[in-house]
Amino acid sequence: MGGAMRQEAGAEERRRLRAGDRRELIARMIQTDGTVVVEELARSLEVTPSTIRRDLALLTEQGAIARTYGGAMSAGHTAEPTLGQRSGLAVAEKDRIGRWAAARIVPGDTVILDAGTTTGRLAHHLRARGDLTVITCGLTALRELAEADGVELITLAGTLRHVSQGFVGPLAELTLSRLTADKVFLGADGLDARLGICEASLQQTSLKEMMADRGKEVYVLADSSKLGQSPFTAWAPLDRPWTLVTDSGATDDQLGPFRALPDAEVITV
Amino acid sequence: MGGAMRQEAGAEERRRLRAGDRRELIARMIQTDGTVVVEELARSLEVTPSTIRRDLALLTEQGAIARTYGGAMSAGHTAEPTLGQRSGLAVAEKDRIGRWAAARIVPGDTVILDAGTTTGRLAHHLRARGDLTVITCGLTALRELAEADGVELITLAGTLRHVSQGFVGPLAELTLSRLTADKVFLGADGLDARLGICEASLQQTSLKEMMADRGKEVYVLADSSKLGQSPFTAWAPLDRPWTLVTDSGATDDQLGPFRALPDAEVITV
DNA sequence: CAGTTGCTTGCGTGTTACGTGCAATCGTGC
DNA sequence: GCACGATTGCACGTAACACGCAAGCAACTG
Image (cartoon, rainbow over all chains, first blue to last red):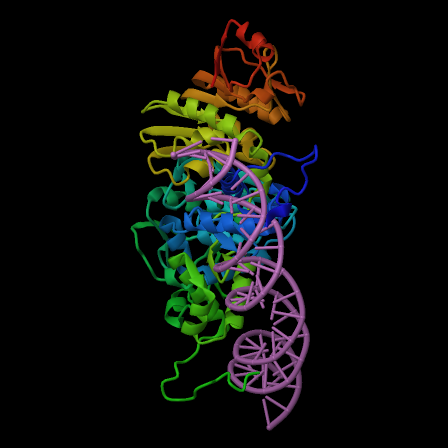
């Protein structure tokens, strides 16, 4: 140990923090930055990696953080059932659908993204893009693109529906009435070939209807668990030609009614 | 490979999943359980740890999960250094200011929150409140209150300024023209007793001016580093009575000009 | 003020997890 | 039936980790 603990007593030695303060600082850094690296902490706090590891082990035990290989990260929202579970239901499918939709979007496009987790995945795949204008009423998409400097991001106004993390209401429709787009990507809580998109409230269906009306091309992104479902009683009819994008887990029984529609194209990914 | 890949051809061999399905299953398990362990996954899915690691690496790349030492966990919202670092400049002061402002807000109030980190802290302290309507053009405040079921949250429309994480432009002003509030809380990049609030663009000052006009009481939240500063050339004058809320680190030199104003009240916390 | 106790730290050692290249195998399309 | 891409198990080298040990530091005690 430490003969070398205080390795330099020279003039420029910075006062070293005590253990408790250091740990608190580490915890705060993790909360702020999201992730930290052992080696960097060791250098900036002027202690050995061993000590940092001990600190991190302690903080992990307290539940404040989570270890990663070579560092640590925020553990804050480990279990967040509200949105987490819901979005966790078909992550892989939603991601594939989102990726396909992102490939459809070309430079110069202006697109409208509905609220929802699937459109959120779509937004995720647009982060690195440029020369693109995105209009959205969804907080998930907003989060994904908040730091995407290359994307011009326009949000609709409105009241936030906490459960769906989207803006709805008269203000949303007011602002939408000032905009149009090349392509519109809608989500759905349920989808029926005859009735259209099913949602929990008329506010949502009303907005979806208007969004569909404001774009040249309409895409409905819905994983196969949504097809043929009508969990609620509010509907947004699909009058104009549209494209259904779903995952390959959809059965022929599910897809049949949609394939029979004259105005709808069906894509499975 | 593996001569042993199919290690037991016996009767009780369970059909093994294909790669895509297995990864989806892993993603779902992580979303559901929060965390998983490599070794356990390898056993239950009957593949080697190597394969699990490869799967996890893939899912990590997609952003769906985050690796930990020996396993993986839900990714949630991690790694946002851009804003995180910036907001780290005077966290304690901003937080005190935000807390004071939150205490000023009473049940039944409708308040307007400007974009910025300080108003973000204010929003943070409103999360547990109820019987409250918040109107905001700031993504930070929006994030804080997205899960706050007790708060009615209305967002202004507009184009996102990525650097300030706020919405500005004609759509923001259009929607604001349909709303009024009891109290308005503004942030500032710089503040001058004579000239008012200093910002990087006229879009921002124009919106601030309008926000100030739409509320009965106007508060300007600015930590002491902002007082007397004019980092940019666009200004929003403060014509009506207003309250400056800053931190106790402000010097008398800084506060003097504001105390001399007939229409302004000065609070230090 | 000296002695003691408890905590913290740096270092060394063995362990564990990680990532990658390679060859065998499976699935798929022609 | 055959060829090609995707996937997997294994082996190996590397990096990070956990733990024990002894030395310093701080605070408390008599």
